[in-house]
Length: 379
Ligand SMILES: *Cc1c(COP(=O)(O)O)cnc(C)c1O
Image 1 (cartoon, protein in one colour):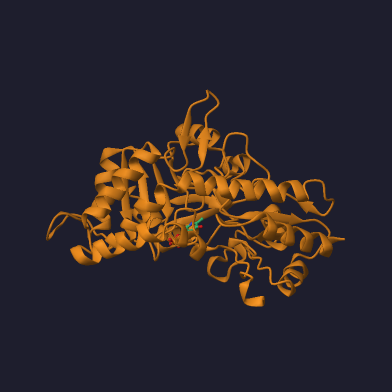
Image 2 (cartoon, rainbow, N blue to C red):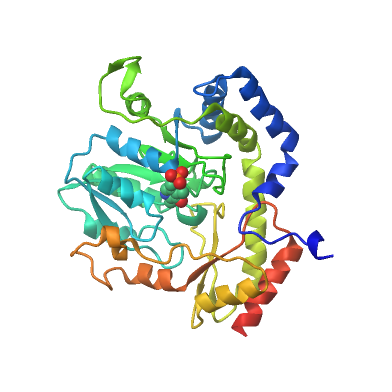
């Protein structure tokens, strides 16, 4: 019977919910019955749980991942015209807040295998006006943080990690010390958008830091620039994680490692199927970082990824292109400094990447169907 076949999705949030439904439903109703919708006890409890999980001194919840990046940059007292280096191959939010605050986004190319910031390119982009670097832990694994932290110390730059796609990933320093993604730079920023690895049922985000002063400042900025009610010391914003979302996130945080393991298992299945195919480049792994596979992204060689996407659609298999246009070629971010060809790796990736369904509820049966359909097209 056709209706018994579950539609394949990029992310199966309903399937994930059904496994923890009783707990989630109760948590939501408890918040409703308490009527503590804003800054209720669940927000503080989630904050404490996440601090413990990440091994970081301060978690400051806020309304979404874009706000987290903005508040982080506001707290660092960057001035209009200051340069902030980030990746050309990323979601727009990273560069958007830089531009919004009147700072100058300085884009650099990424590595062709891991898709993270190319350290040599970062070095070349540093000028006397550079104030911060924003590495993006794209698709679920960390940028080369050891090299970046050394470089930033040398040039006295701030590092703000955009870990919206990599919460829960482990980074290992050359000396063997292991830390969580987002706790390495002065500030880490994440998003709890529903489809992210730790997603709520609406919008949410957070900043992480081990610095007491920065924590205080970010908390104040997120709350209209006040630390005492109705006394506003700095210009702030209104950016809150609401109590219902915090209650949901507390429950889902307990499953985060198991969710990462499910994504890794699905990635390993794809890897095995595609590893030696002449037209497929599978996602490269950085030796210093675990990969929590927010996305499983292939680079096609000598085949049209748009046609593959269309072919998969005829088999009711969704696929996505993250991201089709490099930042430097987006209308809003055009800059005479960056012409077509300025960032060849990113331009190549934007023309040839395709992301396959990956989530916590994927079965081998569904994956076999996806693999067979991809291979059939590339025959
Ligand atoms: C999702 C995402 C953001 C923004 O998070 P929102 O909660 O949607 O504002 C920022 N950076 C990256 C890399 C993201 O994937």
